[in-house]
Image 1 (cartoon, rainbow, N blue to C red):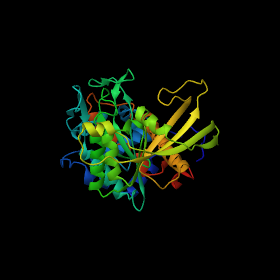
Image 2 (cartoon, one colour; image 1 turned 90 degrees about the vertical axis):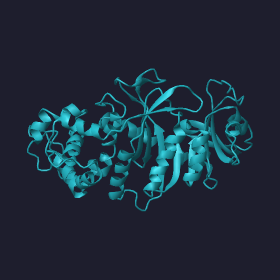
Image 3 (cartoon, rainbow, N blue to C red; image 1 turned 135 degrees about the vertical axis):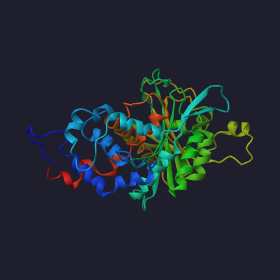
Image 4 (cartoon, rainbow, N blue to C red; image 1 turned 60 degrees about the vertical axis):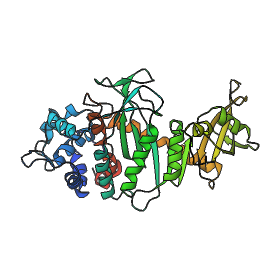
Length: 389
């Protein structure tokens, strides 16, 4: 792309290339087909509403109010869409929301607010499938929670001492395939087993088969590991340090020395049967599973002894049901999920997740999901139509 110094250049100059590509991929048709049917007398279609909304971010805006004023003046005669007011867009988004649910964890007394919008999740998957983004691929599902800090009327205080939401998000590649919003006072482990179960159920309904599941230590929970062991071919979850894990690490007799840019590391593996106490408390009749534990340790510079292992090392352990891949490949494969954090940064800073427009949790579930996959519909930044601009 050539950047020219000219008074005729504006943030709106390349938008028609993007909108044309939307039309080539029939995005407008998919929106009309899968979203709620609007009354015949409506002035604006879902195509007008969503194309206008998405255009805010393609043109450098960061909140829904940018749809008015200068933006509307520049695009009022656009051949691809009719520009609605910000209020009209927000009113339609509200219509897609579903009342939040008040849930209670089995062992606690605190109430948790969850926004579970199966309809929006379903529409998103139908659009992705229509675009054939999953065709012929061995799919890796990453799950993570992220904080969206805000001061909305119903947002709750998080453990990070700031108000906001803590949605659970499933991602395949760079595409968000599931969003379940929760208020900030519900930590990542709270009722996560139910969230992951709903996510897999929805994917199965759309015949999306998951080869591998990856998650951080927030998902090292009995219910989650038991579920993903059945639902995915393989899972890779970072283990949390505790006394049982320390005993397992202590059983590793052979450590492979590995040199890296960060210094010398040691890597080994051991069979590991977790959650013995939890299994007994749940009175499960199904026998406990034994998994593989791949452990990497690095020597502490300060020489501080680990309370559990009595060694001066920092440990990183991955629990998996994959018995074939070698240790280094398992660690490398697991570390690739770091791309999820980068994806959250892009969605928050470039595509509006940090600027929620509503005051209610359930409405702010609709807002991010209606945009989260648009940057992946077309490879905007390297598409051939931009090469000669």
